[in-house]
Length: 555
Image (cartoon, rainbow, N blue to C red; front, side, top):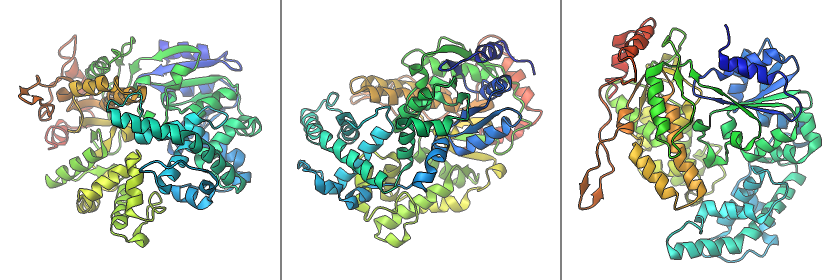
């Protein structure tokens, strides 16, 4: 297949890259980045490695690169291969590990109201995590402050005077001792060969010899999802000194909540673009452009082009995906479908039900019935609630499920759902879990905020902190991710993009908005019949009646 002009330009730029050179590829959703990277691997005869997000992606990439001299791996896997002989099996550290280590007894910890030993231990872990995920070479007070800000808030952006002063005092009194305890805990664990995943990755960043063992066999790196690397990954990649081809889409950055950053913006090098999406046609591309233009920064200068044929003949699995904004939205949508007699496949249901059962058992004091590895270290429901309140989103979700009495409903859902996604007509997931996936048709769940609400959150975030602003922008990014998963049909977006005029009463604006769209009304600039041709191309593999049953009548 002849490369596009954009791909040809990328191949020409990649071929002569030398030590320390960086080529940045900005790839819109569905723009053929895998095909492009495979083309680069064919051109470059030297041994290379394609760094991807998780092990499943690595195995898939290895198959696609089989006829080249490039392999695929995660950064963690390469790091572990270099240190496994010294550390053995990685371990998980908990607040209980910190308490039991005795390191807190060696420090004079200032007394702060509301901070017991367990809460301090949680902060020690977060401080060490902040160091491990950073590009810093030594522990410092900023890591302690970062761990505290995630708990008490940033005093520079708290408006309430009392809360502002409490946050400032807490940081002033605890940040320094937390950084020192975290460093001591690091040394304690390392001397005993107890390394977490965060720790051994940081070791590769700090030790040039071990880094050489991890990357020494390669002559160039290709980096996937570069918009969602964390600082330590970026540091490791740059310290290798190898030629780097980094690909990503800054408008799909959705993981800053766990420390990721847009490394594409922080790497210096030539920028080239992939703007043609081969996943979908112009009708969906127009919707995606509208979503991008809603962003506070106005969106990209480059124009996303829909070049897909709409052919779904190679698609396996569900015909329709309902993509929600939140995990609770997934649960609500799934239960609603079940009540309608339409049984879906719910993404990651096995993991969810195991966590929910364990959380319920913990809340009832049945510690022996706690089977989830994420919850086993808690000795009480109070400990779990405390950690959830410290900003752990997954724990907060589980606490909410138990306290809202949703356990039985989720148990029912686990028995009703279609376990094999390949046999389901409907799939339900969050935008975060949908990344890298595609379906013939996609419906946006009812829990998405509309454009006014998203912009309202951003304007509020401007008065808080840079982190709040990044998270607010990622609401737009997550919506863009969800809306670019379909091959030829998208529904539920009009309520989000074109919300009804605000309704005012004595209490002010009613933000509830309108009900989700019931009818699909395609809109496209230019030829008004273009969408019909896109649709007809999909009929080759999916009957219209099936699609209508799957999308328009999903509720």
